[in-house]
Image (cartoon, rainbow, N blue to C red; front, side):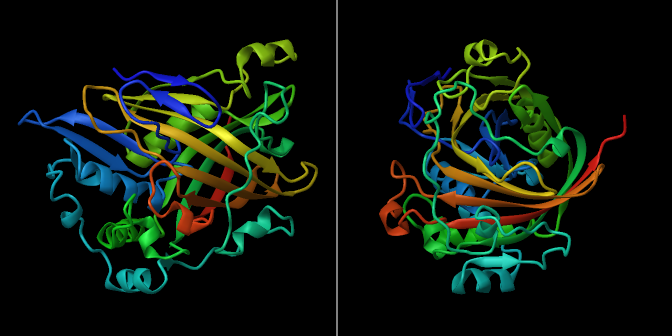
Length: 370
């Protein structure tokens, strides 16, 4: 099995492969055995923070060059050879392909209820040219850092999330995997286009701590993964101690054993795992009915069997914009911005720290019945 041992907030060492990271809310992969005993990697979008075009393109690249076969989850009964996987992704829309070639985007009309704000964070929804926020992890030295939500977000929610736009604002080649393949980039955008206007229902939970209202990451992560996969795919979700957020520091500051931490470790029902940690976060003031916040996540996704396939590296920013309609109803937006990583992407310096993929979602939350 692969062991993931944290070294610093910005890098992890994998004992059987190179350093790599992948956003934990972005990717679901699961190895299963087929009748011919060949491992099949099942890939699908994830919940609340689904698979971005950038993450998808990296998987197209890696697993068409490794010793595992790859299969899109929705078509899990049809095994696909690793060598021909990329060529066999169906082209779903001629207009989407044309849009990708000229600007790398497909979109639908955003619902009128999407939350808006004049805050600097919320303004990042309005531009396609945004850059990665600076790293903030470890700057407060509290040991209980987290992204804090408004008090009115506390509780359990029935959420609906709908993809309304997918773009490659820096150009199509930047979502073409580590080598910038235009073929992979086109198939990546086509795959994103399939999910436009498809609502996904899931449960979310936010809990009150001594320090503020935070996301119940363990609960929400399992809910997101299972909801987008259409069945139970998560074996367990555990919190992991890091310098910025650890149990000892939380308890020492008056917190509890149940307070969510920021670093999670997910084991799937198959030989795959992913570890995610927060490297930057920020939010608007918490005292109004409109709120925006962001979180920049870095994660490792790795196979835990004897496969030699390397882990996958990407950094992804999740931008939230919420508006309280009443005590039991919240509407909002989610933007996922994908950035290249210097460890894995040949075009990293060409991207100049800009987001190379943007996925925009409409969010609707209704408080769950007791």
